[in-house]
Image 1 (cartoon, helix red, strand yellow):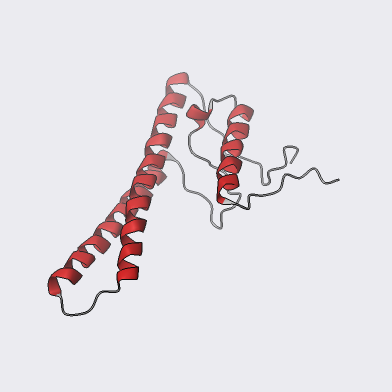
Image 2 (cartoon, one colour):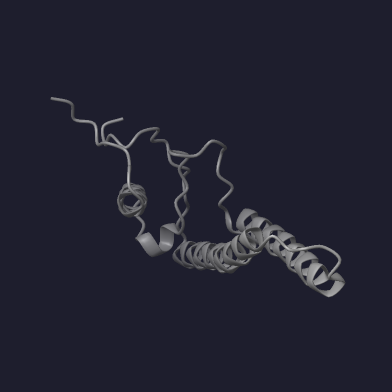
Length: 137
């Protein structure tokens, strides 16, 4: 029998999986989940994550600026009235912007709070070394 924990397959299971990864890594380093902050591993990621408070602030500002430009282009599209708008793309852009901007700021504030808690407690954070969800790896 294989002892490997299967990877996430459904959105609900994926959320539980990453929460468990945070709990395991925080416990391994002697931190609470609040002191650990956002998930810092690269499991399930195509690129190395940038999730320090400074990195998340940069990404959050970049996302906010890009969504702001998209919003300005949407307003310009409606004010010009020279072409027929594609309502599917407009609804998707608005829904995506209303989801991604608050989510990115929430991750930034969560990591900023964790960094402050670690600094106040005099604790340091080691990057995760686990490449798999198997606890013995």
